[in-house]
Length: 240
Image (cartoon, rainbow, N blue to C red):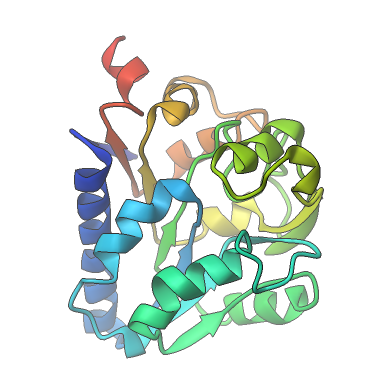
């Protein structure tokens, strides 16, 4: 089931998405004393993290995973997702437990993931329709939690367009990614997806039949998917 929220701008979208995430974190802590989350990265998440870290939550009761990471990129590289999350989230709220994944600890982090259900997946949508680094055609069937994959050209160009790398040849060809089945196993999925560059991906995710060729379409089959858009990312949807 999809619940769509359309904001006037990315800042308001970020506040709304952060509020929804915080609400589910509070519920999980109230019910079980602990909350487990998995987090997306990228420039589309800037406004959401800016609001989320200001939420009044007991972050010591939150365990964090992240979705993906480049293979062979040092953790202190500006484009590293471990660096991204450390600077924008972990160092600000200090979660009770942090599980960063890289090519060297896939099995260890996968085992931690399987220990108990994950409450919230903060899942972005890429310009090519990917979720995490599951570029098309994605593997919807594997029970693996993480896998090393080869990134397609459009995905790598997106990383240059967002300013993480100077040119496509600088973008690593491979990455570790959480697979779709693991993502779909979380209790609640929340997607913050602003900006005009995401408009095509948004309309395809919503209106196209579920297909590995557009990995984001699988999100429609989740029982609780909240999709936060701004007027730019929703422009094609509003024009229907």
